[in-house]
Image 1 (cartoon, rainbow, N blue to C red):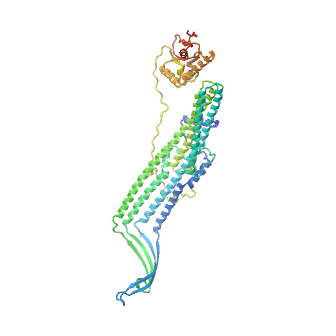
Image 2: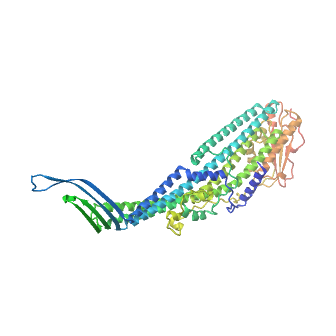
Length: 624
């Protein structure tokens, strides 16, 4: 990891440890390819285009309703042959045949229609606003999908590089181990284990490459073009503009501006106007009409004629079989349905916004801990690598496990970085502010007033959607553990551990079951006043005296290190290695050698003045 990355990680960890979470930072510059791709998606994506067509169609519907206020002019022309019988004509049954022509121009102006036209104009105006807010909602959603698509491609690109680095690290370890096996410093079993981990690392690399392909296909679907070959990563600490400071502020600002909630509210207003439109059927219709008609040979009358009429016409339906009542009941039910859909929209947006904002806060806090874990694991792996190649107390399994842990730590940090940006985008999209934060919009998109919004000022959030959010459970991290019950230890307590219970053969790294055995010892003396822990390692006689002494000392030091990690003060532990100098059984038999390979831990209470256990006595002679 680069030095700058380490410093930012430390700074992030300090911020989290001190409990500081703030959004007062300036917005980090967004990658230009992200903004360009989001702008293109908002303008060309088929889903947004379909919503745009719905909106423009709703505009035309409103214009059609407004035409009801204007006069209607009709022109009628006709020409044809006419036959007419005259009773009493001679001869009987004779007919007169002639050509008739005629025409008329009629102007009709509505004077009163029971407020049908007025309410239809209002209904379709609100319906136009529904389509307008649905267009905004589609733009917010596609902007969110654009951010997700870009972030996922950038994320997977980083994870591919991380998986490639992990594969190369395992491959390098395998190559070095081959040399050590040829030199006789390691076994074929170790080589097989390293080969298995190398295969797993290669499988992980192939998985990440496949994941990158999948998200690239999704990018193509949303953006309409392939992602860049070298996509710019989202910078660490990226903060989108407009993120609220608290959940309450997110609700207070976000709910009144949510396109989803506003569309549902306008749908309620449209359905209410529809009820008023249905009531027009109970009123008469009054029109003013002017008609100018002319004709020749019309109705059996020879010659030309012309009629000019100016009149007021009243049309009042008296009975229609209950049709109008049924249509009114239908409109009322549709209004109830619109209310229910408004409540659903309120609940859905409130939930989405609450979860998204909480994800922003949670992931922001997690990032500090993940960076700390990442740094710590990297240092541990470097130390383990040096110790392993220097033949100091580290097994191949330790090294391989730490390599995998670092790989997972890096993956977790990368995922959290991108998840935080996506959570910010989800929050802003729920608030109807993501397109503004990205600086993208359709160039032909009208403003609210242009679209016909007459709510000035906008309704308070309590009327549109009462805001409420569940409280996040707070974990008290400062709760003290129960205090141990003190026990009284008057005599030294000596416990002998077979070496096979603590270590693998000829190794000095504690096994998990060995750690559990030491945990049991610490549990026995928990609460006692201890002056010193004496740890002495012993071996059998296989090998040279010097090798056995060093091996026994390394094993005693491993036990000491573990005791310190469990809270025992280092100053209270004394470790020593006696090698093969203090056998308790004959080294001539396998059973005897097994008994001699041991670690003795003696716990001496404070104030004890008597003799120490045999492990501190002068060297013994091997039994015959």
